[in-house]
Image (cartoon, rainbow, N blue to C red; front, side, top):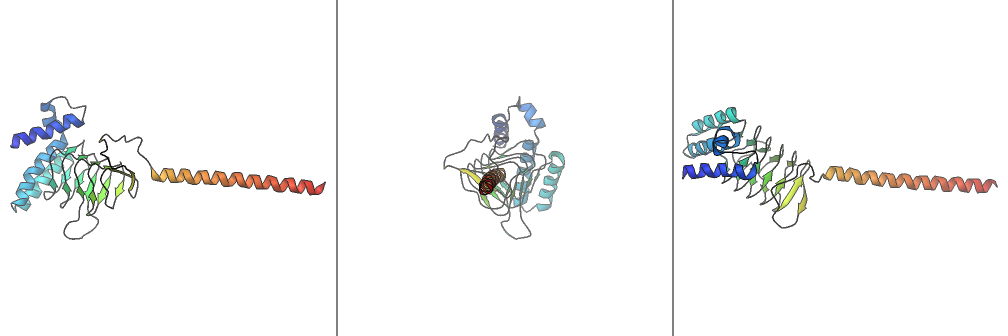
Length: 223
Protein backbone atom coordinates (compact mmCIF):
# COMPACT_ATOMS: atom_id res chain seq x y z
CA UNK A 1 0.00 0.00 0.00
CA UNK A 2 2.77 2.45 0.96
CA UNK A 3 4.88 1.62 -2.09
CA UNK A 4 1.81 1.85 -4.34
CA UNK A 5 1.18 5.40 -3.09
CA UNK A 6 4.83 6.31 -3.54
CA UNK A 7 4.73 5.08 -7.13
CA UNK A 8 1.49 7.00 -7.71
CA UNK A 9 3.19 10.18 -6.46
CA UNK A 10 6.00 9.65 -8.93
CA UNK A 11 3.64 8.79 -11.79
CA UNK A 12 2.06 12.24 -11.43
CA UNK A 13 5.46 13.83 -11.98
CA UNK A 14 5.82 12.05 -15.33
CA UNK A 15 2.33 13.23 -16.33
CA UNK A 16 2.97 16.87 -15.39
CA UNK A 17 6.69 17.46 -15.94
CA UNK A 18 8.26 16.66 -19.34
CA UNK A 19 11.73 17.04 -17.78
CA UNK A 20 11.27 13.88 -15.68
CA UNK A 21 13.17 10.92 -17.16
CA UNK A 22 13.39 8.01 -14.72
CA UNK A 23 11.82 6.89 -11.44
CA UNK A 24 15.28 6.90 -9.89
CA UNK A 25 15.75 10.56 -10.80
CA UNK A 26 12.30 11.55 -9.50
CA UNK A 27 12.77 9.62 -6.27
CA UNK A 28 16.10 11.28 -5.48
CA UNK A 29 15.82 14.80 -6.88
CA UNK A 30 12.20 16.03 -6.81
CA UNK A 31 11.65 18.15 -3.71
CA UNK A 32 7.87 18.22 -4.17
CA UNK A 33 7.73 14.44 -3.93
CA UNK A 34 10.00 14.45 -0.86
CA UNK A 35 7.79 17.04 0.86
CA UNK A 36 4.66 14.96 0.26
CA UNK A 37 6.28 11.81 1.57
CA UNK A 38 7.53 13.60 4.69
CA UNK A 39 4.07 15.09 5.20
CA UNK A 40 2.45 11.65 5.18
CA UNK A 41 4.67 10.63 8.09
CA UNK A 42 4.17 13.91 9.94
CA UNK A 43 0.39 13.83 9.42
CA UNK A 44 0.19 10.27 10.79
CA UNK A 45 2.12 11.33 13.90
CA UNK A 46 -0.04 14.46 14.23
CA UNK A 47 -3.20 12.34 14.25
CA UNK A 48 -1.62 10.13 16.94
CA UNK A 49 -1.22 13.29 19.06
CA UNK A 50 2.56 13.20 18.69
CA UNK A 51 2.47 16.82 17.63
CA UNK A 52 6.01 17.83 18.58
CA UNK A 53 7.55 14.99 16.60
CA UNK A 54 5.19 15.77 13.71
CA UNK A 55 6.25 19.43 13.70
CA UNK A 56 9.91 18.46 13.91
CA UNK A 57 9.58 16.28 10.81
CA UNK A 58 7.66 18.97 8.93
CA UNK A 59 10.28 21.61 9.78
CA UNK A 60 13.12 19.29 8.84
CA UNK A 61 11.36 18.68 5.53
CA UNK A 62 11.03 22.45 5.10
CA UNK A 63 14.77 22.84 5.67
CA UNK A 64 15.56 20.17 3.06
CA UNK A 65 12.93 20.96 0.41
CA UNK A 66 11.97 24.62 0.90
CA UNK A 67 8.33 23.50 1.16
CA UNK A 68 6.44 24.03 4.42
CA UNK A 69 3.41 21.80 4.98
CA UNK A 70 1.86 21.87 8.43
CA UNK A 71 1.36 18.29 9.67
CA UNK A 72 -2.31 19.01 10.34
CA UNK A 73 -3.06 19.74 6.66
CA UNK A 74 -5.16 17.15 4.83
CA UNK A 75 -3.82 16.24 1.40
CA UNK A 76 -5.50 13.99 -1.13
CA UNK A 77 -4.01 11.71 -3.77
CA UNK A 78 -1.80 12.70 -6.71
CA UNK A 79 -0.78 16.15 -5.52
CA UNK A 80 1.91 17.61 -7.79
CA UNK A 81 4.13 20.36 -6.37
CA UNK A 82 6.23 21.74 -9.22
CA UNK A 83 9.69 22.87 -8.01
CA UNK A 84 8.01 23.96 -4.78
CA UNK A 85 10.45 26.42 -3.23
CA UNK A 86 8.53 28.81 -0.98
CA UNK A 87 5.28 26.83 -0.91
CA UNK A 88 3.41 27.17 2.41
CA UNK A 89 0.37 25.03 3.31
CA UNK A 90 -1.41 25.86 6.57
CA UNK A 91 -2.68 23.64 9.36
CA UNK A 92 -6.39 23.48 8.48
CA UNK A 93 -5.84 23.44 4.73
CA UNK A 94 -7.61 20.67 2.82
CA UNK A 95 -6.41 19.64 -0.63
CA UNK A 96 -8.35 17.27 -2.86
CA UNK A 97 -7.14 14.85 -5.52
CA UNK A 98 -5.16 15.70 -8.68
CA UNK A 99 -4.24 19.20 -7.52
CA UNK A 100 -1.24 21.06 -8.98
CA UNK A 101 0.68 23.69 -6.99
CA UNK A 102 3.59 25.76 -8.33
CA UNK A 103 6.47 27.41 -6.47
CA UNK A 104 5.87 30.34 -4.15
CA UNK A 105 2.22 29.49 -3.44
CA UNK A 106 0.76 30.27 -0.01
CA UNK A 107 -2.36 28.53 1.24
CA UNK A 108 -2.63 30.51 4.45
CA UNK A 109 -4.83 32.23 6.99
CA UNK A 110 -5.79 35.87 7.38
CA UNK A 111 -5.30 36.35 11.13
CA UNK A 112 -5.55 34.62 14.50
CA UNK A 113 -9.05 33.20 14.05
CA UNK A 114 -9.75 29.78 15.53
CA UNK A 115 -11.04 26.63 13.84
CA UNK A 116 -11.00 26.31 10.05
CA UNK A 117 -8.85 29.20 8.89
CA UNK A 118 -7.09 27.95 5.78
CA UNK A 119 -8.35 27.23 2.25
CA UNK A 120 -9.96 24.14 0.83
CA UNK A 121 -8.66 23.26 -2.63
CA UNK A 122 -11.02 20.88 -4.41
CA UNK A 123 -10.19 18.18 -6.96
CA UNK A 124 -8.33 19.01 -10.19
CA UNK A 125 -7.61 22.62 -9.21
CA UNK A 126 -4.38 24.38 -10.04
CA UNK A 127 -2.67 27.20 -8.13
CA UNK A 128 0.00 28.95 -10.20
CA UNK A 129 3.33 30.51 -9.30
CA UNK A 130 3.33 33.02 -6.46
CA UNK A 131 -0.44 32.94 -5.87
CA UNK A 132 -1.77 33.60 -2.35
CA UNK A 133 -5.00 31.91 -1.31
CA UNK A 134 -5.95 33.18 2.13
CA UNK A 135 -8.65 32.36 4.67
CA UNK A 136 -11.26 29.64 5.09
CA UNK A 137 -12.38 29.82 1.47
CA UNK A 138 -13.00 27.15 -1.15
CA UNK A 139 -11.39 26.87 -4.56
CA UNK A 140 -13.86 24.87 -6.64
CA UNK A 141 -13.15 21.79 -8.73
CA UNK A 142 -11.23 22.24 -11.99
CA UNK A 143 -10.47 25.89 -11.21
CA UNK A 144 -7.21 27.73 -11.92
CA UNK A 145 -5.57 30.49 -9.93
CA UNK A 146 -3.31 32.64 -12.08
CA UNK A 147 0.27 33.44 -11.13
CA UNK A 148 0.68 36.20 -8.53
CA UNK A 149 -3.04 36.38 -7.74
CA UNK A 150 -4.32 37.08 -4.23
CA UNK A 151 -7.58 35.20 -3.61
CA UNK A 152 -9.72 36.13 -0.60
CA UNK A 153 -13.16 34.87 -1.67
CA UNK A 154 -14.65 31.55 -2.71
CA UNK A 155 -13.99 30.51 -6.30
CA UNK A 156 -16.68 28.50 -8.13
CA UNK A 157 -15.95 25.31 -10.03
CA UNK A 158 -14.55 25.51 -13.58
CA UNK A 159 -13.28 29.06 -13.11
CA UNK A 160 -10.07 30.94 -13.83
CA UNK A 161 -9.03 33.66 -11.36
CA UNK A 162 -6.39 36.35 -11.86
CA UNK A 163 -5.40 39.66 -10.31
CA UNK A 164 -5.05 41.39 -6.94
CA UNK A 165 -7.55 40.89 -5.46
CA UNK A 166 -8.41 37.80 -7.47
CA UNK A 167 -11.30 38.06 -9.92
CA UNK A 168 -13.04 35.31 -11.86
CA UNK A 169 -12.32 35.88 -15.56
CA UNK A 170 -13.46 32.57 -17.01
CA UNK A 171 -16.35 30.33 -15.97
CA UNK A 172 -18.05 28.28 -18.63
CA UNK A 173 -19.34 25.33 -16.65
CA UNK A 174 -17.04 22.79 -18.33
CA UNK A 175 -13.83 21.26 -17.10
CA UNK A 176 -10.85 23.45 -17.95
CA UNK A 177 -7.46 22.17 -19.11
CA UNK A 178 -4.79 22.12 -16.41
CA UNK A 179 -2.06 23.49 -18.70
CA UNK A 180 -2.63 27.21 -18.00
CA UNK A 181 -0.62 29.48 -20.30
CA UNK A 182 1.11 31.72 -17.75
CA UNK A 183 2.09 34.26 -20.43
CA UNK A 184 -1.41 34.81 -21.81
CA UNK A 185 -3.78 34.83 -18.83
CA UNK A 186 -6.35 37.62 -18.83
CA UNK A 187 -5.43 40.72 -16.81
CA UNK A 188 -8.56 42.59 -15.63
CA UNK A 189 -6.52 45.56 -14.37
CA UNK A 190 -4.76 45.98 -17.72
CA UNK A 191 -8.06 45.60 -19.55
CA UNK A 192 -9.64 48.32 -17.37
CA UNK A 193 -6.69 50.66 -17.98
CA UNK A 194 -6.98 50.01 -21.71
CA UNK A 195 -10.70 50.83 -21.59
CA UNK A 196 -10.01 54.08 -19.70
CA UNK A 197 -7.29 55.03 -22.18
CA UNK A 198 -9.70 54.49 -25.08
CA UNK A 199 -12.28 56.72 -23.38
CA UNK A 200 -9.65 59.43 -22.85
CA UNK A 201 -8.68 59.29 -26.53
CA UNK A 202 -12.35 59.62 -27.51
CA UNK A 203 -12.77 62.65 -25.23
CA UNK A 204 -9.63 64.27 -26.66
CA UNK A 205 -10.93 63.75 -30.19
CA UNK A 206 -14.29 65.29 -29.25
CA UNK A 207 -12.55 68.29 -27.68
CA UNK A 208 -10.42 68.80 -30.80
CA UNK A 209 -13.55 68.64 -32.91
CA UNK A 210 -15.29 71.24 -30.70
CA UNK A 211 -12.21 73.51 -30.80
CA UNK A 212 -12.12 73.36 -34.59
CA UNK A 213 -15.86 74.14 -34.70
CA UNK A 214 -15.41 77.19 -32.47
CA UNK A 215 -12.46 78.42 -34.55
CA UNK A 216 -14.47 78.07 -37.76
CA UNK A 217 -17.39 79.98 -36.22
CA UNK A 218 -14.99 82.70 -35.09
CA UNK A 219 -13.49 83.02 -38.59
CA UNK A 220 -16.98 83.22 -40.13
CA UNK A 221 -17.99 86.05 -37.76
CA UNK A 222 -14.95 88.09 -38.84
CA UNK A 223 -15.91 88.01 -42.50
